[in-house]
Length: 256
Image (tube, rainbow, N blue to C red; front, side, top):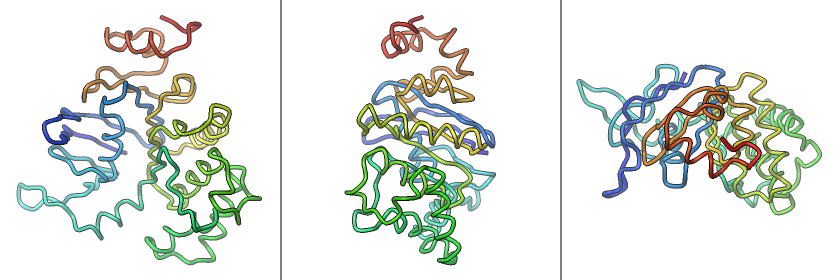
């Protein structure tokens, strides 16, 4: 379970998150939608403490992320402790972030061995199974430059799963892909959703959010404007801002 309570974040005078409250249940798939600059990616990055909070708290399975409570005050954890916490949170970025000098297999096993101290043989076996899971068992020895964008993103998903995370975060995982490669990545995420993995997906793929998410969250200007089931959000949004946004991004066949 992920609980986000009254989270605030500013960059200078720009208030990016304005008191976000959100709860993600175990096994739930939550899609976060919204225009550029609405705070979606920043919210995602606060969950694993890639961005520090200005106010509020985030807990995963009851454990406070990035901070500890001493008396009545929050104190930031040391970097080593934060890194240990991050091993429970898989993250898939827009631009893959693979190590260019490592093969697909080596990219996947690096963090479980270095950050979690796990046995190389066990991790390698798991990594090969994950490559099979994302349809790349024959590309274990390929370097990122030898892979398409869609293949690189599938390796990045396998790398996130190798940590055995409690939750996986996706920050617009298809935005850097050519249109014909989007489907292969979304198919992998769909399979994860069916397996009951807890997923939080920032996405501009409306069809994916409508078909796969258990809940859709619409953000604008640092606030959660509306949330509900895909049927509610796409079929009968309650807020004018939600209706306005969807009318601009959904294909004409799905106009409200």
